[in-house]
Amino acid sequence: QVQLQESGPGLVKPSETLSLTCAVSGSSITSGYYWGWIRQPPGKGLEWIGSIHQNGITYYHPSLKSRVTMSVDTSKDLFSLNLSSVTAADTAVYYCARNSVWGSYRPPFDYWGQGTLVTVSS
Amino acid sequence: QSALTQPASVSGSPGQSITISCTGTSSDIGAYNYVSWYQQYPGKAPKLMIYDVSNRPSGVSNRFSGSKSDNTASLTISGLQAEDEADYYCNSYTNSDTHVVFGGGTKLIVL
Image (tube, rainbow over all chains, first blue to last red):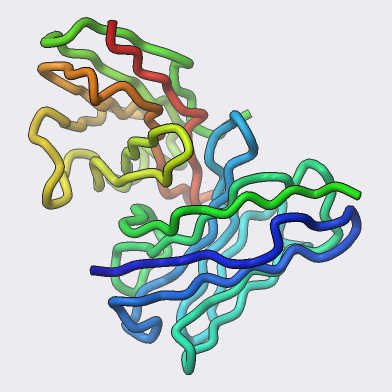
């Protein structure tokens, strides 16, 4: 059974960088799938942030592209999200998830982490 | 504003059937059979219920079904049960530079 677990600070100051990691178990991050980040502001809907492949190929939402960096650590079976210059609008629950179609970043997302709330506040 | 349009809420009584619509464009739902649906309980992660328009993952009840016509996808839940009360989100690939889009979500109320 594939499991994903997000980790990182729950509070980030405005203008700083939000950094999260997602640990993958039950499957290797080098299994050929894309791995994604999705966020959900409190009381609102889901927003795809981007997806990354084991070889480092990334696809980002254009509205976040200038501030987002994703990376993969194949030795530790984890992938990471960095979001720079954050504002209160970036406050959200951040989920990591697996793109279920081998070799493709298209939907659906079949396995999800439990989510982690990140609040942007001074 | 979400890229895909869903009704804010739908309701139904136990045993009834309900349908949730998800309207997109010719760049997403109309162009590809890559529509998926997720169920989300408060404080929980979304759960995949339907993928590629009408396919159910293993373990998902056959009371859940999906379909598509032109630029609109639909999720139908038959034999409503109290446990179906949750938020439902549609999701699609798009050939715009957005790549992946979600609907705004629909709250299902079981009366």
